[in-house]
Image 1 (tube, rainbow, N blue to C red):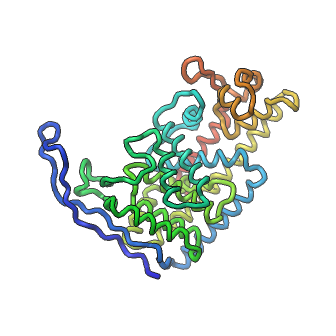
Image 2: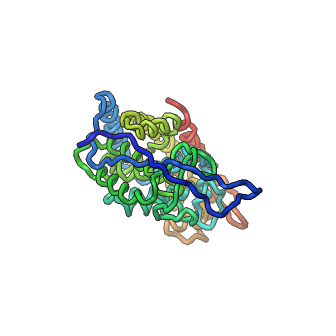
Image 3: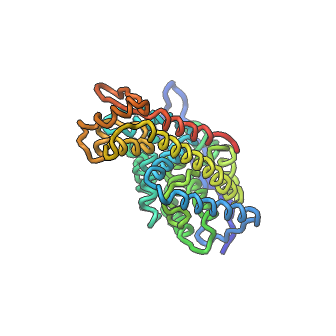
Amino acid sequence: MTSLRPITYEDVRWEPQGGWHAGGARPRYGIYHPAVPAGIADLALELPSFVLAEAELASREIARFDAELGGEIAPFAAVLLRSESAASSQIENLTATARAIGEAELPGGTARRNAEMIVANTAAMNAAVALSDTADADAILAMHRALMINDPRHTPGEFRTEPVWIGGGSTPIGATFVGPRHELIPGAIADLIAFAQRADVPALPQIAVGHAQFETIHPFTDGNGRTGRALVQALLRNKGLTRQVTVPVSAGLLADPAAYFAALTSYRDGDVAPIVERFSQATVLAIANGRQLVSELREIRENWNGMITARSDSAVWKVADLLTRRPVVNALLVGQELGIVSTNAHRYLNPLTEAGILIEATNGPRNRVWRSPEVLAALDAFAERAGRRG
């Protein structure tokens, strides 16, 4: 077993292709410094006792939260996963309202760019959960493929074959951080997976370190942060910390993104403790926020019982249940979700509109859309709380 070593850096010459730049500027040649991540497969995870205690507390909170929702998982699993996807995207400055995200998910609807990217992130999160039994390199590629499927220039589901960097402008010279040379990626990912599959490391610290290592490897040309946070969800399920729900860890990290990025930098300098601390604190914050969201959704749905006048066997009640996890619907979605003919969907949506539960609008030519303002407000409030420090 070895302690974590700081990453080292190589000297590589940058020689841009194509001669002169637009406007007659001379291309910038020089030396850049891609990272060489230390191996972690046999890492001895040495942490201060108080950091381990925080991680243990956060792990118990995860298990408790997962158990609390076990009896009514159907609506809240989808809501929490979507909320985690939105928060993870917001860390990358991709924001959209709950309404815009709901409209982007509709079959046959139109979408704004940010909302479309958040919906793709939800697909990546779903892939992460579905592939959590393996959580290997192929699973990572599948998460990235789901995330970037609408952006082929970033080679969805393929490791990069070119340099990537953070800061520094149009070249990696002087960049804040340059990812490892692409030739190192397969070996580095294999090393990461070997560490993640160990059974002799406390689960939450192991997940935090695995995430930090992934972000250091930076294996894709884009989407590394979102894929890396999807990997967190896969590992939470793989390690048995969650069994049924998505814990919106990104919503906790969003409370202080600067501290999250500083912890990643500390990790690259050889200090594991800050990233484990951030994950533990983010988890506790996220669960408190998630509990409040679930409580608000339960109250909203219960209040509707006194507003709906349909017969007890009417599909109106099923539509009401659907709205707690899909607060923006159209006839196609209702038909798909409830197994009814979509042309009959308005028969069950109109009574909810008349009761004041739904508002009808349009989303594109001739596309009638219904939305629940109460549920959307609860989701937007969750996102707003996620951006506050607690």
